[in-house]
Image (cartoon, rainbow, N blue to C red; front, top):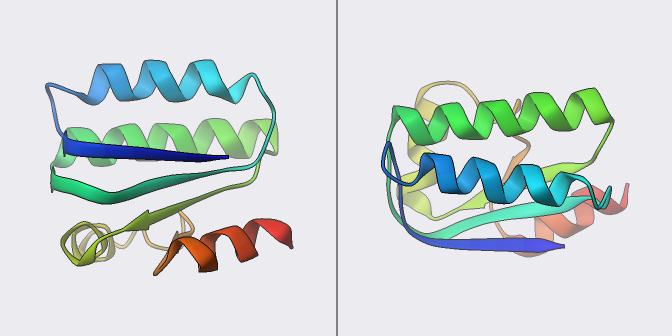
Length: 99
């Protein structure tokens, strides 16, 4: 499954993001969080991604994150690339989940 988000992932949208992802964790399918259409990611958005990663690890559920250059740079800047299974393309993320 691929969840594509657009707009901003910040303090205002973080609760909606977490609710949506948490509701979909019940499906128990590996998934990709596609942030290539996100214009802005702040610390609240990063916190929501970290929370999602922790839940997935607890449930032993595969996930990956894909972002545009701005989002990827922000994630790498705080050294969360490996923790969030950040990939450079949707194809890479889907291939990662196959393994």
